[in-house]
Length: 281
Ligand code: PLP
Image (cartoon, rainbow, N blue to C red; front, side, top):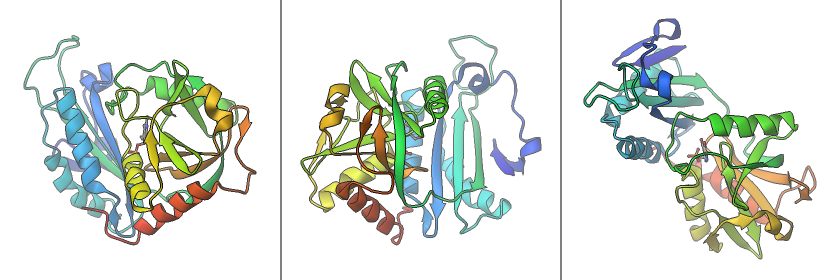
């Protein structure tokens, strides 16, 4: 694979960073994941804007426009122009002797690669998920490369033979290990507010808009574990997940393996049809 690293496109074997890179030592950095579909990179601007906002949040001085202008050359070098692929970007604070406080003005480390990727079958169904304590920190709005809490929760889901973990903080379901979560009750879509306890997913933002356009009422509030059996539908969203209908969450079954909730289905179809328009700007 080809990798963009600090101004150059090189083969992955030659893409090396210092062991003193603060991303390596501290997880001191921000990342972004985008997918390229038939009509370009899906909501590219929203992803690049989020990357820039997150860098500002943690005080890394780096202009995302630098990475943006390298996307095309990287896709050419990777032979992925107009091909379905996943684009990963990460910016870390840079190289400095290991110390919690950091020197100001050191150059950030910017890295990006693109790999072939097929979106999962668009109308994903039969997702099973477990509940896991959300023991992450209180700034889950930051798209930090430090993902230990997410990894541990996701691994627990895999070991339980399920596809995802729904995270529970103080009795309230916040999000998945790498997805946002939505519920449906009485024809109303419900999702956790975009505060410091979740990552405000781009797919989540798109769904909020789609609900408006389809006149489906949407409420932003956290659902408690006790409320799960009273919910009619549930689904996870994410860039590489799209919309995955949850058949079973913890002990509660929402629907049969080959079925979908009607509102989930409607939103899946609406999201799929967006792929026919240009969403890359
Ligand atoms: N929540 C978490 C913790 C994530 O890691 C992700 C994606 O990586 C999401 C939600 C979904 O975000 P997006 O729709 O922007 O991919």
